[in-house]
Length: 150
Image (tube, rainbow, N blue to C red):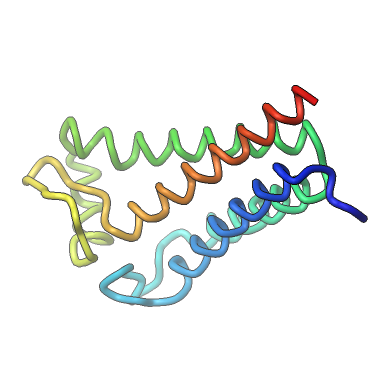
């Protein structure tokens, strides 16, 4: 079966890169890049995300407008979750609950951004993930716009 559009192919590839990176850092210990020396605490979620990402890639590869729309919505939801989890606490202060999670899972990983006791930055692993998600979002939205304008 042949690809519907080149923009959808680019979106599928960008989505595949996000998915492969996420699964790699969630299952392979690369301390201090990630800290999964004693598991990552979200194995079921990681398997679900792998399946959803695979479905996005396949649907973009073979689909048209709906595939681009669904993948764009998926990436919008994911970047919203990343902003609310990482960037809101970084800029406006972390809750006590987030401080405990951060201390347990992220305090010993590689950090690039400055921090204070209340402003805990995303680690480098998550910074890269956020960039990849943003690229996938932009490429998926471009595919969607081009599909609807064709």
